[in-house]
Amino acid sequence: MPRGATAACVSGARFLLGFECFNHLNAAQREAVGREVRAVAAPDATLLMLTWAPASRGPLPHGASRSDIEAAFPKWQVIDEEANDKSALPPLLKNVDPRFYRLRRV
Image (tube, rainbow, N blue to C red; front, side, top):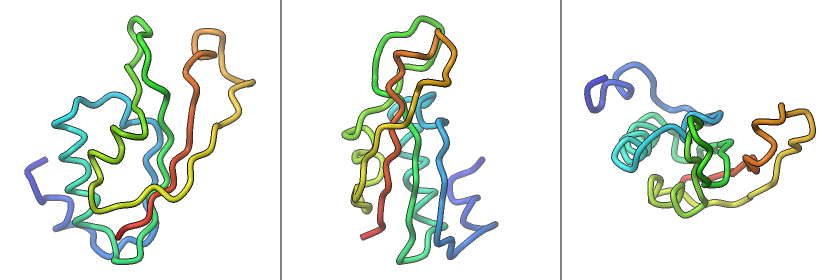
């Protein structure tokens, strides 16, 4: 999608959800997501993201840390971080350490 294309479709979103996709992106792609999310977000928006802790997992995505999120969303503040229950995950995913991050636009 061309830069800024998302903003042409949506604007003023007050709640945005990033469910695990961020884990799959490289640094440049993450920065692009940050720009596009900022473009569509309302001034008082909340962003809820689920990521995995960074680790080498063979064919699975590397994951993302809090600092990765903060780098991609410089105009946002992480206001909450919570570990997600992983008891129902399949054995291959038991070590992903899923975390929810709640960000507020600043």
